[in-house]
Length: 438
Ligand SMILES: Cc1ncc(COP(=O)(O)O)c(C=O)c1O
Image 1 (cartoon, protein in one colour):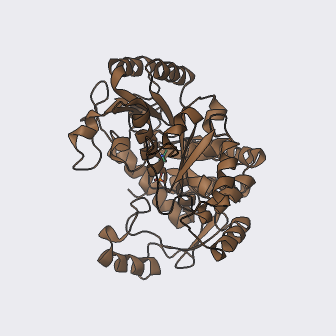
Image 2: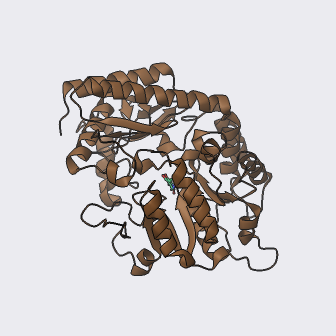
Image 3: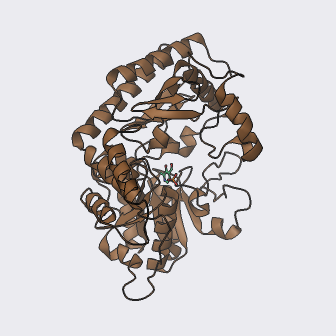
């Protein structure tokens, strides 16, 4: 029984209440969909049950943070025990040491780690660390790549043919971004070795950090090319800047993250999402010589860092249980499910009249409303009609019993089965064959 979008549904009633007290009726923009969002009541493994009792396969998993789906019994049990013993202290805990040990055991470049409460905070902290280490102001990032809600990290996130320029312009994302922010962010075209090297070298003496994602979600998770990352590593080191790899999402691709899988050698890495086991988290991990900037033992550190809920034992407990369950075999299986989904959905599109494609990396995927080959932001860029096509597909899939993002993104979880993926592929087939209302 599907009660969405039904004017008499409980989701509709909650949305009407929300409209009175929350701008636009909701808190996060992400779950918004026309004509009103589905409201969650509870989650069970791979499924989320809405307030009207409809059960849907959850391919969002709180935007890639619930790698074991909802309410995994081992996480619930450990967290329940921890909450009974206290949820936050102004004292360090064993749980924080234990999760740090687990994370540091996972990738060669993770010698030490500093926790915070979100991926956005982690990116902000890593950028501040790089500035403190180098004494330089500017950061380099790739066009169209998301690194969280921080003015500097958001530059040129949604630039368009009207303003993106030849070498990418630095465009503020939200209204009111000060000019100082865009002046201090240099934007490069992802995977373009020649243009990016030229732009970086032209600013060499001012650059504190190069911030990169090895498979950016907004670019359909297209993988960083070997020549591009080799150039970035070489030039970054030559000019004395810090290489920050954002693994907030890609850490799920291998036990040691995309850096281990693809052979990237960052100085600092930003982490979040799955390392908190479903609770708010962020972290900066990296080589000891860079992480020293956080060390307070000789007086005020180069980068003072605190935070009321930082490293709280509930998050640390959930994160540790989650990572302990996420071994090579679990990740291999997830990545195979990802391949199955991509092959199946692309085959469904190919035999229908839907002009689209799905791309992905490991257990993350993105559906595009066009068939152009995607290698960077500009080649992936969708027209308004192509964007509407994907939103229409997402709307139809919600009615069929599947949650993906309006932007066509999705992330798998370990409780999912091959049968779940096949049911999703069948649903995509059905809705594209029936024709979408745009
Ligand atoms: C690559 C990347 N970096 C940073 C962030 C920000 O993380 P958070 O939402 O925890 O602030 C995200 C969030 O989706 C992300 O995908």
